[in-house]
Image 1 (cartoon, helix red, strand yellow):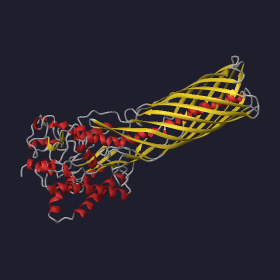
Image 2 (cartoon, rainbow, N blue to C red):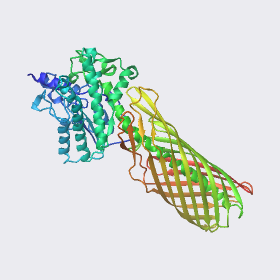
Image 3 (cartoon, one colour):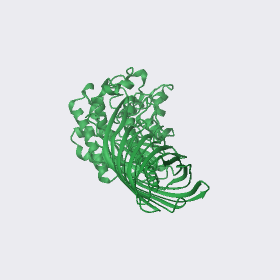
Image 4 (cartoon, rainbow, N blue to C red):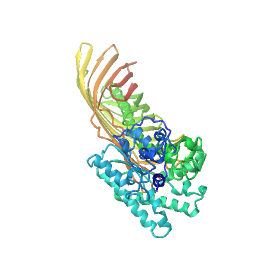
Length: 637
């Protein structure tokens, strides 16, 4: 048998696909230490390129072809590797992509031997090759992918149709075999593993009536694909493995049902010529329908076009970047609470000017921004924060003042194209101050609890040329405490002194499920588990003030350190994977140290009415810009 006759059938037999692109790469918040890919032709980045000369492919054309798509368009795995810090090349060209067209899950393909005398490497063999190269360990900070099973179905289909293989037993054993391979990676240390379900094989041109396939074959392709996916995800759920499930079956159904929105004009025929019999392995612009790389869903009988691969890559990104972006939902309330604490500080100082036994009422407002730059921990998140507080203080003695207050804080946050959310919280506070006089020892304290409403939560999901938006809302809370102690010295009319402070906050964001009313936009919906963000900031600094009649200009500077910087993760699960398989994606972790500067002026307009205006700004904090302006009006009874 000729090399061409031996190679082509095995390669065509791989599964459908979804993903990669003619695409542009964009910055991703999450970065991994490598992207390792295992599977068949749906993920193959060009493993057979060194052998194409034996098929008669001209040397000048070899670098252009070699993928199972509308070449030279990349497959989804190449796009994802490029975006997340991996080497997208095939493993036999120095890269991290071990996938090979024709590969089965755990058995060597029996219907072909590729050029060079090497049998098609199963996923089991591919993983063995990788683990052998690393001494048996898998980098826990890398991203892994397993997409296989279609070739096992293709090669077993005649026996199933002939009644010699029980499809229920076959699918169960096949799913178990793949889960065992996934388990090997996880046992070796892998934490982030993409596991792809099969797309609907029955919907591909090779199984559809468009190319003359009988209805029974179409139905069998669909039933076996769906059955395998159910078995695969059931087995993963039962095994307790933590993976990122990729529901390509639902995704491609949605794309096919709304093809025009994705730019497709043909979802039934093949882009590669001659129609139905061409292999996408050697398919390129010169032997395909003009413009079909972006307008056809399928390259050949069972493989997706470059545009379909681009959509798949975007779909994978949404599963990773979505949970990561949501991590800042637990960070923005920290800035809102800092603003509320600033209003309490001015409230208690106003109360200290009252006569002993008297009550002072105050109203304060604070407006500012809290912006997190795009980095390796999160997307850019810009928020505008507003706080209004009203309260009463009581000067119980010469040295002790106590107060209560209620506050309303809101924030509007945007996540660099990923979406947006807003927060609204109503806070109740008790606070007070103990001081020995105009100089000497002082101590301030506050404790606040609040319920938070997260409104207008929106996540934008780019899929090829189209973008869909999922929405949600949820609740949460924040409990905080702040203690500052210091000592002021008198230096003429100037008062200066050191201080130390501790601010503790505990933010909770409750679980929520994304909504989308369009029945053709369900595949990208996620359930996001509850988040907790514990913050403990210690501050060391100095303050100074100077009396000018009834007014006192003042300034303060502090060196601040966040002591709660453990890695934080956001847990998600795709809604359409009914087995409720959850996975964890790294979330935003703040920088350790920064400084805060404050300047302001406070005093009395009349004997009873006081006024204070304060500007506060954070500097030296990596990837963060934060400031706020506080105004306080008080009335002493």
